[in-house]
Length: 640
Image (tube, rainbow, N blue to C red):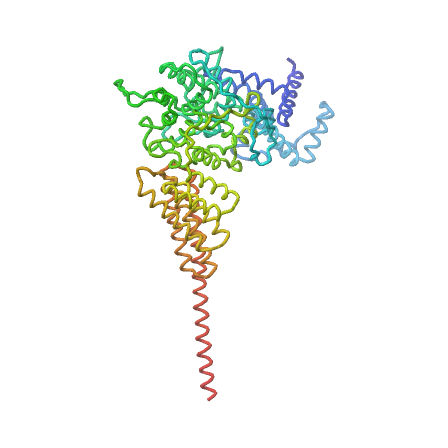
């Protein structure tokens, strides 16, 4: 290849790279797509990818370095006198008759303007190197950039309740009938995943935290990525391989596109000994013949991350430690209460984790018996299930599932302003299959008239419409019907606080404190029945907020001592809330309570500074008055 051809080729590469940086993908896009096909499990895969994507950048960097700075490396990196050196070279440039007209003109220009030419030459080098590096970064980060594009969703999401902050969603009134699956069919797992993919997507987004970047959780050996995955899967020629998400696979997980992330989830669902395979084995083990899609989905949610919880737990010597969920479901037969209780966490879960696990398991049980469907989940706040109070759905060692309780929990979980599942699907371009239709719900058999929870539900609706006085009345009636209704206590305290914010009344804030004290007294009285550190944390937090507002009212009335006392008590309440949240391992609330303590510290600092200034000014005023009075007395005596 001639020098002229090499120059043309190099110019073309630079041109293509500049086009890619501007957004015109061209040939480099094709090269990128080819490198994506490199097998991830190939040990040389990452090196080859970097080599292919960065080869042109590296070659051009070396070319530019050799062409423009090869003789000046020492000068650039050691002496830092590149401008001075090039300046002297330009001053001595000679115009040769043998040179081309362009070169004669260039030498003359450099000789006339030596400093300008030297600086221009240096900046050309910097610009060229920057262009090469920018092109490499553009290629390497391309997957991340794809995730931030405006989504163009073609899927239709169905819902009667338009609580999506203006999201334009088409509604479909079709109803999905209950479908039964033959467990003996060897392709049953694949059929369920394919036919119920949208249900899986919605339930996973509700019950699992989403990680765009892999994160190593406390006491874990594998990184968590996407929707709660700790494994990385590859598929080649129909063979799927599972790798622990560690070392190089952490970077691979971070660079997955949205479609690739959900393909990882699909592979996880179907992999040997993972959730669907475990469900099938346990069903066959305990003689299930046919099950509904809702029942499978409930078990899927329960076993997505830890499928071992679906089966029996044995000691090393073979003795049965505890029965699995599916074993207990077999023993439950057609008894709905026993079916629901089959999901309750036992000794297979550490004692300190059981409260959080049972919050999740209650939802799984409700999905299993068909009382809650994905139509409910899609409109809920993501991870809203964790906000449920354990004392509301777990009483006397049984899961509660009456109509009023279920409706109350669902109503409380709908907070689309915080980011619903539906909004996540829309904004992140989550891959669905076709449309989402309504699911047929089962009739609630245990529809006992839970008057206390029904009143609590009325109070919640009044609270949401900002009718705090009506809400307070409803919550009080709920407590009178069931003194162990912790939802009513917590809600009553918050309603009093909101009312106090409107009326600026110390009495309303005092009622918050009385309610919190009553709530804590009831929990301490029935420790075996009522124990939820999240409830305690919320109660003390509400008390702290009330005392903080009381301090502000005292401050406005120039009652500094009372204000300081309230601020100090508020800080103590926030500190207690923090300790309870720590016990519950609720890190989000811990941050809120810690910030509240800092806010109180700042308020106390400002108030004490004002008080000192006020006392100083009072002292000066008094001193001046005494001085003036003494002066008047002296003048009066002289006048006599």
